[in-house]
Length: 167
Image (tube, rainbow, N blue to C red; front, side, top):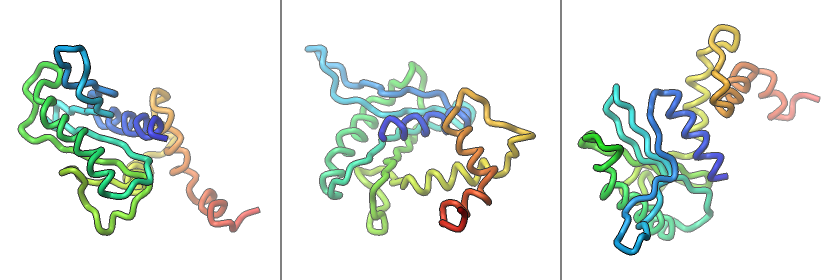
């Protein structure tokens, strides 16, 4: 499922005008080993916005998640100033995208904002519902977003099915 999340977020950020690095290895040492791999780094030159996203589908306790995300987000803060050979913005936004979580007590993890999968999907669907399939279909290079545009377009009938009100 992490691959799905990375792909969905990659499409979503590309759709919004970001350039992406997926599975970016950082911290090469003298022995040829890397410190860690960053899931997704996105840069929008028009907004001068750099964002580092890490995905999690685990069922770990928050203290274990904290350790995992700390490694990743610390490496992002340490190495992303070298991102693609240009001067990045002074502020790096970091987001932990989490599928399984009760975030009512947790708004951040390892210094990064938590984004729940359900909130990500709501944000995408809210944006896509303003574009009709007939007037502005999602380009085929983003099949996950295109699927969500179909879901948004036909939401009325789908809601009945999902709620068990249709045969």
